[in-house]
Length: 252
Image (cartoon, rainbow, N blue to C red; front, side, top):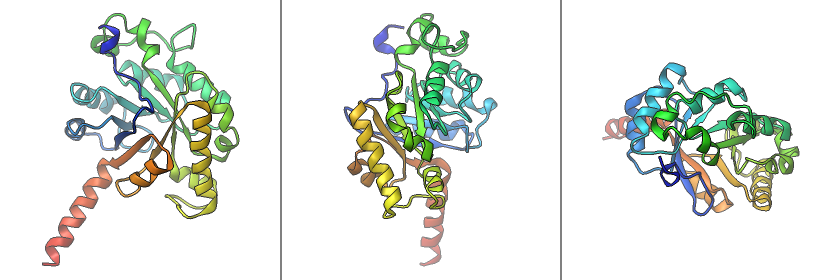
């Protein structure tokens, strides 16, 4: 495969909109991949997707949506390497609170000498070619999550780590760490200030700011300066659609 055929990394030239898959379903994954989203994320931290589910979902998505990013369960080299070997084009790494933790995540995504990713790209070499090991570091993205007070305190240091060109805000965990309870807390000064600080710091360091959102919040997040925005989840989307349909029929 020639370099121009590798999936282009996410960049901030224009906003990137994606969705979040929590349900282990190849049909749902394929349906999402046909919508023209900029990326699809598969959640292995809080979703129901396990190792047996991931590769079939990646196979369903790949022909239609080459940017597939997996949120790994933890900042663990084995988990990160396994997802990338399966064909993911990047990983979202939860609960990164320091530059050292960000560096560890990046090194897990990079082959020696830049990192310590083990060599064995079983499916990745099938779909990206025999030169995958030589070229993977140019398009695989490591995306630390900013969702703790430690991350806020170490923001400039995390954003200065080579290989971190995108970060992703987990608003629920961020809110919990700010003492606000789960969910989004727009209007609360500490929450609003944290989001503004993250966007401003990303601008200083040339890093793309991303965030978890929904269709209602996404326009506001884009206006706030976020460039990578997840606009929907599979399970929540299904529930909301069914609830609206049920309510509409019952009210007739």
